[in-house]
Image (cartoon, rainbow, N blue to C red):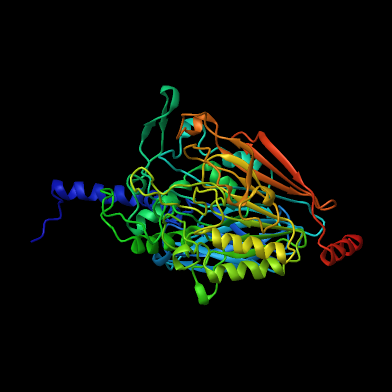
Amino acid sequence: MRSLINPPHSFLRSKSVTAVITALPLLLSLAADVSANDVPLMEQGIQIGDLAPGRAMIWSRADRPARMFVEYAFDENFTDAKTIRGPHALEGTDFTARQDLVGLPEGKDVYLKVWFEDLTNARGKSEPVTGHFHTIGKRDDIRFVWGGDTAGQGFGINESFGGMKIYEAMRKVEPQFFIQSGDSVYSDGPIPAGKPAENGQIWTNLVTPEVSKVAETLNEFRGRYKYNLLDENLRRFNAEVPQIWQWDDHEVVNNWSDSKDLSQDTRYTVKDVPLLTARAGKAFHEYAPLRPHDAEESERIYRKISYGKLLDVFVIDMRSYRGPNTGNLQTKESAETAFLGETQLAWLQDELKHSNATWKVISADMPIGLNISDDFDHNPPQRWEAVANGNNGPAAGRELEIARLLKFIKHEHVNNIVWLTADVHYAAAHYYDPAKAQSKDFKPFWEFVAGPLNAGSFGPNSADGTFGPQVVFTKAPPAGQVNLSPYAGLQFFGEVNIDKSSRAMTVDLKDIDGATVFSKTLPAEAEHKRDREYDRDQDRD
């Protein structure tokens, strides 16, 4: 017969059940909180890219499979806002996603909310990240900034220094867009927790596993971009300033070309430069907020972005189509002397010839007339990394291709061309004067150099006399000093202002605090028929 008297352990079990029942509302509440918090995260913020008339790219990244949503309006209250259901963010793109906003009106402030919805049945939504930017209109003056070279030479995010604070200095000038001139990451440069700097100081870094060694795997290349986006200054800048990205060598490996040989570099277990380039290129296109080219060349970087009749920006790629780095003294053009390559060169000539803009900015990832060595100390005889070859003579090697471009510009009467670049880690202004050149068949022009944004400071480089560069200004480390940290203050960006009424362009080179170290105003040369058309448009405005 079953006893009706509970044994002691049954009593204890009953007390436990009673306690669980009593605590059940609290447990359910905690479970709901956990569920509510288990939503996508947007740790890299947002980026705005390739602003053009009527459109802009919006980029972001989730931490899991999710779908991107973008809401935008033309006032801070999001009156009459539009919401776009964007693309999925999946493992194949490291959960990055881009949405092209189209049909945007000119001359308007655009306010953004971006979020992700996960791909579970719960459809958990991330907290939105907000941003805003301005579309350029006919009645607007134009202001933009440029620079390159971020997190190089082991100088990463130093929180005690204020992080990558030059991005805050650039944000404060309220530019309408930013040209990232290359070396947006340093995949070949490990970032340690600390490293010696000048005057006995120690530079301290945030570190992640992906930046502790040279990048070889796809995830290590991706990790370089995620590392930079840990910086609050950069994320704030990205949410307000549309960007135009190009690349150079350090997105892959230092001075890469068809002659690059890693066989003796013990840091690399992957010795195949084409494989490293493929992985680096995929990571770059995942994290750059650029508008993808069509299927004809899906990874193409060179492109033109127009800003009405005041400005066209020609973004060129001096890396992907070059021949090997050599002594660069060939007397005839060949595949070995290619720098832009025939297809890109033909595109650039055609676009310049048919441009209706007053100013044509050529955004180059390397300077034309500076001697840039490819590891002279370890690879004699001398090999050259950029255009110049150090001989101060008539055009030879890669200079032949550039001479052909400059001759075309002169004979097609294309006026108001300015070259903007970075790469050499100091600030400079160069005036190319055919009267002082060895190869003289070109119109005089200006080239302005900015950078680094957050990297070691070097320079100045010597100038090659082929195209007669006159070094009007430089600001670089004192003689005998190299690879100075951002503590030294020798970090530089460029600012360009184009006045709508006079059409004059003013170029300022500015330091890490936003102070101007050099300024030059360039009046617009007459463009004949194009000038008259511009003046008629001005009258109608």
